[in-house]
View 1 (tube, rainbow, N blue to C red):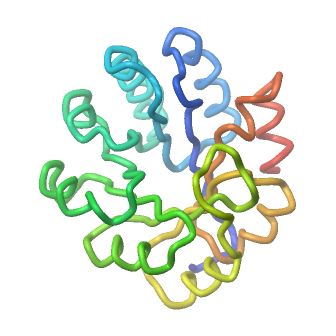
View 2 (cartoon, one colour):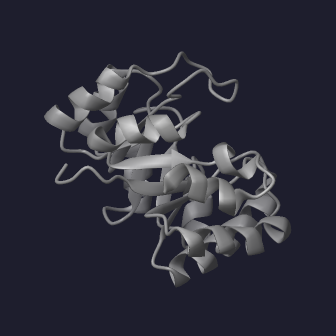
Amino acid sequence: MSDDTPQLYLMTPAGAQASALGPLLAEVMDRIAPACLRIRGGAEEDELGRLADLAREIGHARDVAVVIDDHVKLALRHGLDGVHLTDGARSVRYARKELGDDAIVGAFCGNSRHEGLSAAEHGADYVAFGPITESALYKGEPVELELFQWWSEMIEVPVVAEGAITRDLIAQLSPMTDFIALGAEIWTQDDPVAALVQLWT
């Protein structure tokens, strides 16, 4: 990395309803602009479609790329910029073939360096590791911060840190990550905008 300032990677709440999220999402993104907006899964297909349209409208108006968890067909149908694959390297080649060379294909690889390397070799545009600390929202054990240090020194593919992020962890991760993902860390708070500002600034 050329500097010690990672970019914000914003995740919507899992199972979010488009009608409720819209105004708040715009407010959050106007306060601190993310590099990428990721639509989490968890909703029914129709609701995910509405959320995809909303996120695309809000994101693209602010020059923010929009990806969606796993749903290649929804990404195509709703004009999104790509997908975030939650199964590591397994679907990277398929997603790339379906979406084309210009699409964003990211891969979440838990705490596995091997899975991350496989995803990168298969053509992922970024690799995400997490959770950073214990979290009931993630299946695996927390990732060692040394993995980010090693990755940033050895691998050119950008790396994202996600899962149970704190302000102290942002400070520790900043020199060795390209993006830091925030989602539940802000949406579970009474004032997501204030929570984001407190964490990020």
